[in-house]
Length: 357
View 1 (cartoon, rainbow, N blue to C red):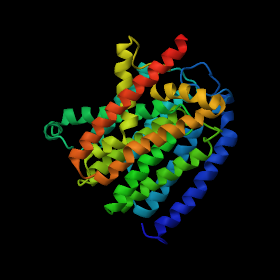
View 2 (cartoon, helix red, strand yellow):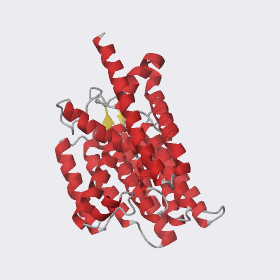
View 3 (cartoon, helix red, strand yellow):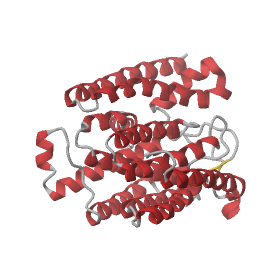
View 4 (cartoon, one colour):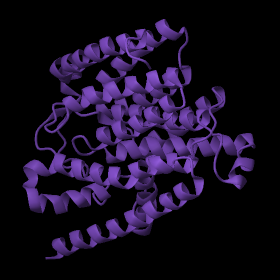
C-alpha cells in the first residue's frame, strides 16, 4: 500500500475508532450481566492475577472486527465470509465460558469440531502447496484434506487459548506473526489481503494498550478463540497465495502456538492426566516460576511475556531470510522442536527441585 491511498486513510480512521471501542468497553462492559465477565477465579491453574479483571477484550475485538468488515465491504465490494463465520462462531463458543456458562472442555471441543468441519466443507477451505510430496498427494483426497485442515485449525486455536495466561504473551506473539505475514504479502503484492492483515494488527495493538504491562482487561476465551481462528486462516491464505514461500517457514512462525498444544497433549497422557483439562505445567508457567525468583511476583507477569516473546523472535525471525528455501526451513523447524524440548525439561526439573526443597 502506497502512502496517501484511500486504504491508508481508512486504516487511520479505523485505528482511531478501534482505540475508543476498547476504551468504552473497558469502562462499561465489566458490568454486563451483573459482572459475569469479571475474572475473579484466582484458584484456577492459569490464573496469575490477584484482583478481578474484565474478560471483555474479546467483545471489543469482535466489535472492531465487524467495523472493519464494513469498511472492507465499502472499499472492495465483497466480504471474507469464511473469516466472518468461522471467527464469529469460535468467538461465541469462547464467550459462553467468559460469561460463566459452565461447558466442559470435552463439550467445547466437540462443538468446535462440528462447526469447523461444516465451515471447512461449506467454504472449501483447503491447504495447498505443502512442502511434502506424499502429503500433497494425500490432500487431493477430500476427506483427508478436511481432516488435515481441521487439525491445523484446532491446534492453532487451542494454542492461542492455552498461552493466553500472562499480560501480553499471546497478543505480542500474534502481532509478530501477523507482521511477518504482512511483510510476506506486501512483498508479493497481495494488497487487499495485506489491508486485512493490517486491520488485525491494529486491533491487537489497541488491546495491548489495555492489557500490558498492567491489565485493565483480558481477551477471555472468546478473544483468544477469535484471534486464534484469525491467525490460522491468515496462515492458510498466505500459504495458498504465496507459492514461493516454504510451508515450513509458516510452520516456524506458528511453532510456539502449535507445539505448545502438541507437546502438552502427549505430556499429559504420559502423566496420566486428561489432555483436555488445564494444568500448571506449561512452558510459560514454568518460566514464570523461575522469573519470579529474580523479579518478584509483581513484575514477573509481564516480564515473563517479554522474555518468552524475545526468545521466540530470536529463534524464529532470522528464518525470514530463508523463507523460500524449503530444506533450511525444514531443518530450522525441527531444530526448534529440539530446543523447546530441552528448555522445557530444564525448567521442569528446576521447578520440581524447588518444590521438593
